[in-house]
Length: 149
Image 1 (cartoon, helix red, strand yellow):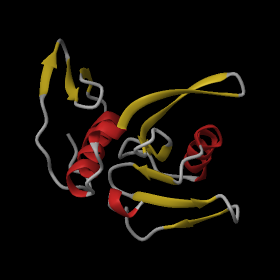
Image 2 (cartoon, one colour; image 1 turned 180 degrees about the horizontal axis):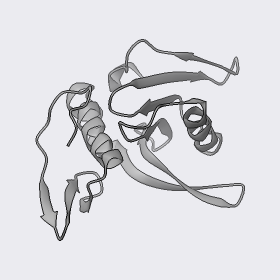
Image 3 (tube, rainbow, N blue to C red; image 1 turned 90 degrees about the horizontal axis):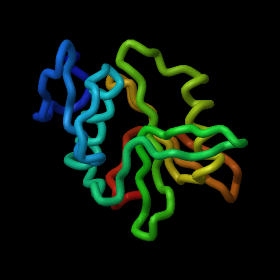
């Protein structure tokens, strides 16, 4: 798979018929190894190993309903009380992150009300902090460690 703008990690990958599958440690099951899934697995490991995010507070492919439409956010990180803290949206490395990508994660956040939004295509990463009191947001220089959230 493509080298990403993230540290390198070791994964459980195996061939299944004519494609590959990867073990998703959060979902505890094997999933198809697509370019977007490669970004997800690497970024989740980055959050856990480099940013000290507790894996017990992280979930992949979280279902939500917005205006009667079922959607799924890629990764949701909660606080110790189970409230949404961070939403992460992934794209394949070949997909440019555009306003449409930000619109997508903002739609999810209209339901979840997380404090941080992260978008990554494995090459570029964006982190945004939401201030609900002032109804504003700010982009952060770096993705903070969990203890700084």
